[in-house]
Length: 298
Ligand SMILES: [Fe+2]
Ligand SMILES: [Fe+2]
Image 1 (cartoon, protein in one colour):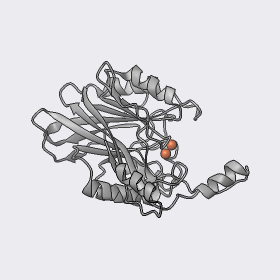
Image 2 (image 1 turned 90 degrees about the vertical axis):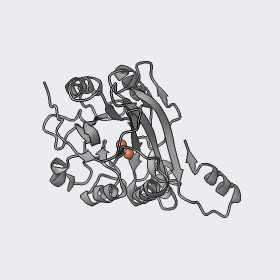
Image 3 (image 1 turned 30 degrees about the vertical axis):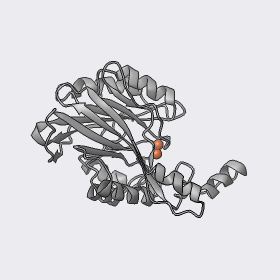
């Protein structure tokens, strides 16, 4: 069997509800400082209670990669575990710390020997264990191992320890993410997509009991182009000239999804999209009205 990594154990304290459900809040790609800032506010003041909070951190360091201090800042805000994606290794310093981080995973279908781990188990109070698996899609992306087959092997091993498994499928193509959700239906608690930075509205519980959302969206600037400053994007897209992307300024938003899972069967009981926007100060009153209406969509 190829790599099977089920070693990160972290204990968190929060009593289970009377129905023996656990709630997992998953936050989409965190983009730079605006993303870290809005998560801090959201988790402190607005977020629903959750036994486990996971965030995709591949863009936490100014849009590209993750630093140790980014992870600490997000942990201080309440995030307990982290997934990654195609930008996980953008910052060279990650090679110094990823193997020491117990609740940080990167895509599992990278080649054998890649630093870090592609799956882990988070142990909650009362011994409830939540497995996490991170995968990268291959459509319009890198030619890695099959996320479908890698996931199957990891689930087979992980199922010996827990029925509760959350999969972050970091992929470009909606079809590939939907296919993975259907392929794993009944074998995991939830499949959530990341990477496009745009939240989809197709949340559902699949027939076998797996909660599914094609993309969670991002936690980052509202007015950029998937988080990046539009001027640099225009230079590249309109003029076809090279340009260095910078994280956009201005108000930010949180996008994510809340799962409620039966902690005995591992089946999803509910799935709810989350969207929260920072207060927006605009001269345009209609824009302000729109923003306040959208301030907390569930
Ligand atoms: Fe991303
Ligand atoms: Fe990505």
